[in-house]
Structures are given as structure tokens and as C-alpha cells.
Image 1 (tube, rainbow, N blue to C red):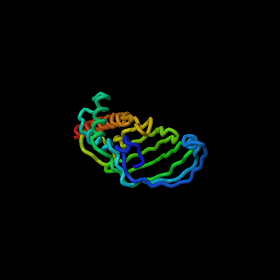
Image 2 (image 1 turned 90 degrees about the vertical axis):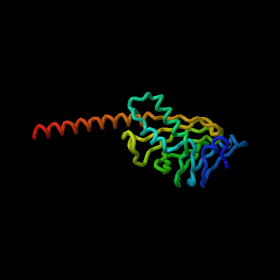
Image 3 (image 1 turned 120 degrees about the vertical axis):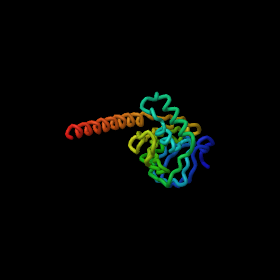
Image 4 (image 1 turned 180 degrees about the vertical axis):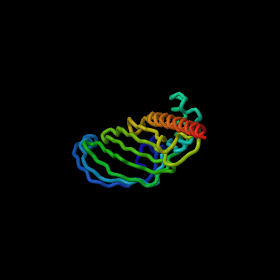
Length: 203
């Protein structure tokens, strides 16, 4: 209820927080720029739209994921993310206030088959946000065999004003891990064929 309209249409949940802080100024903006303090928070019933864990199933369904152009994979990921929400379990953490900037870090939120990890800052004088998160797979899925708990990771950055933040996706970490896994699978297959050949020669 305290969020502006645009982020309120994307994220909802119950926030409980407490802390101590101090500041001074002859206006809200002046006071917000001097606030210092710390505290803790917890989140329950969290739901974030356009962050569907089913994105990993969509990536696992791409047969030629090693050959696909990065722009095409970006589109697959963005479309799959937008198709549903991330529903999180209870989570919490600590926050600090330094010079009017609120900072949280090392937040982990478990959801259905995925985990959201990250943190960020919020400047209280103008509500500028800078936040980086990773959506990580936490379950086994079928498909091309290259999307696993080790490779299934998607970066998500939020920047700009909290009233209308910009979202940037980063799939480079997942692409690099997928390529490495593909090479490992190919090497395992070559080792298997070599072992079979040596067995036939001994026979």
C-alpha cells in the first residue's frame, strides 16, 4: 500500500521492519539526505510479477540453445519471465541507513523451484533505486539437459526511480555456464566412446 502505482502493480507482500535512525533538516529532502541508522526487516506473502521461475523450463526446451543467437535467447528469457510471478516464502535481513541511502544486501528469498538472491540501495531524498538480483534454479528439470541448478541463473538489475524503475536482464552467466556444461557433456561422451573402444580391443 505504501508503494507508488507502478511498482505496486508488480510487487506485493507484507513488510515488517524496525530500526533506529536520526537526521535533521528544514524539509523532508534535507532531512532524508542526513539520515543514519540501521534495523531489520521481514517479508511474507511476497509475490513479484514478471519473474516466473518457469523461465528455466523454457530455456530447457530450447534444443539448440548452444547455437541460438544471444538476442533470440534474450527474447525467450524475457517472454518466459513475464508469463508469471515469483511467489516467495518468508525472508528477512538487515538494513543500514548512511547519508540518506538505505542499503540491504545478501537477501535470499526461496520460492517454488527457484531462489532470489541479491540486494540494493534506495536513496530516500529522491527515491532513486539501484538493485541487483539473481534468480537461481533450485530444482531438477527435464529438457535439453543443460539447464541445471549450477547453470540456471539469470541476472536482474533495477535502476532509476522507484516510481518507474528500469529492468535489465543479464543472461551472460547462464550462457557461459551452459556452454561449459555442453563441453563437459561432449567430453563425457568422447570418454565413454573411448572406453567402449578399449574394451572391444581387449576382448
